[in-house]
Image 1 (cartoon, rainbow over the protein chains, first blue to last red):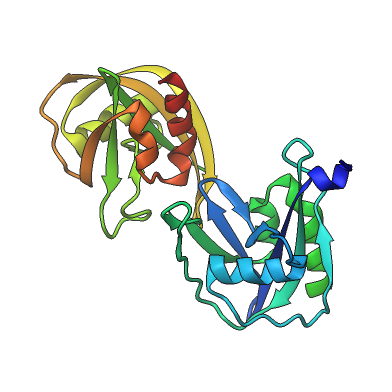
Image 2: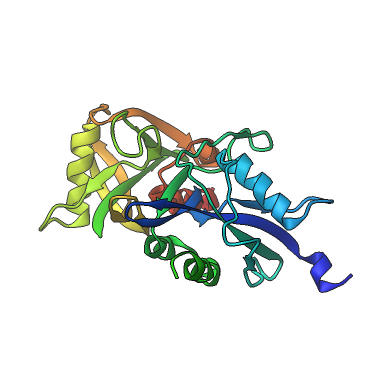
Length: 142
Length: 127
C-alpha cells in the first residue's frame, strides 16, 4: 500500500462573503475545535464534489460562486500524519447558517459559527490551518 | 482577558454542574458555577462569594484544578477551576436555570460552554 492510500483525505470550502467592512470568512466550531466546513471524501466523489456536499450538509449554504476558479490548497499531514484536508475557495451572499442533525451522531455536528475578518480568523485558527488561511487571504484580500 | 473562576464540587463521584439561564450569554449550556473576579479579589475569595450568591451555600475552596482560555465573540476569558467542598447551607437556584449532580461517566451527555470543556475532559479521565 502506498503512503497516499493510507491517508484520510478531507475536502472543504473556505466560504467568504463581502460586507461593508471587508471580507468575512465562515468558521465553524465543534467543541473547542475551529475549522471550515469539510468532510471525508467518499468513493467516486471528486474532492470538489465532497467539499460542496459537506458545505451544504454542515451549513445549509448552497449558493457558492467559485469566482477565483477551482483553486485549492491542502494542509500538511496532521493527526500523526494520517490526515490531509484540501480547501477550495468560494464566495456566497448567504449569511444565515443552518445546522442540521447529523444522523450518525443524533445532533448537529457543530456548536457555533462565526463570520470573521481575516485577522480574527488567524487568531482562532489552529496552526495547521494558518498556511491555508494565508493563501486564501492573499487571493481574496490581495 | 477576564479572569473567571469555577468551582468543582465533587461528592460521592458526582460533580455539580449548572445550566445557564435563558437570556444569558451561552444560554442553555452547562458550566461549573462561579463568576468574574473583581479587582483586588483573589480567585478563592471570588469563588466563595459567587457560590454564596448563585447557589446560597458556603464552600471551602481547595486545590487548583486547571486553567482554560477561550475567546468568546465579545471577550476572551481565563477560567480558573478549583476543587471545592460544601461547608453549610441549602442549595438554591439564584442565577441558573437548573443544577445537576452528575456522575463523572455521564458528563458527555451534557452540552457545556466551550471554556469549561477542558475541565470536563479532565474529570472524565479521573473517572
